Length: 192
Image (cartoon, rainbow, N blue to C red; front, side, top):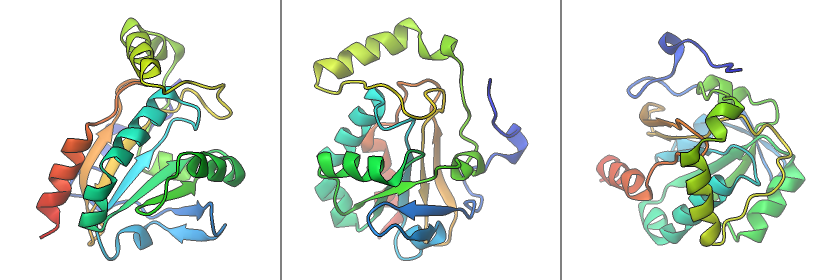
């Protein structure tokens, strides 16, 4: 049930980021991916679906360090494949303002371009994922019914101002997200 590209076609660290078109949920306008990183490096956060407990937890962790991201002047592009209205409600309910930019990719073309695979139930319903889900719920991050594809895997990429991928994190399971400290450390290396 995976629909990812072969490893040899995966965009890797040191390679050009794929050019894709996304939709800004506030302006409802199209954004070409290079516009996200043409002035400062950008963090691309691909979500599983808006109600994903782990995506909610990851977003909250990024938000905890909002002042550090603002100081660096980067954009954090939250990308998902649900409707513009649902995405806008999600972002407003969590007060996701600058440097967050909420974008949709309803056809999942960016997900495919960045080679973010789909998984199967056997990799979502593991003891590790259940344990992490329970831990996230204890911190107030609750799951809701998926309105998209619950088998879509998340990922995080950092793209520099030349359009080169400097960080690629393709999650191994639904609960797997990179630590914010790791993202910030790399951004500090990229931005003088």
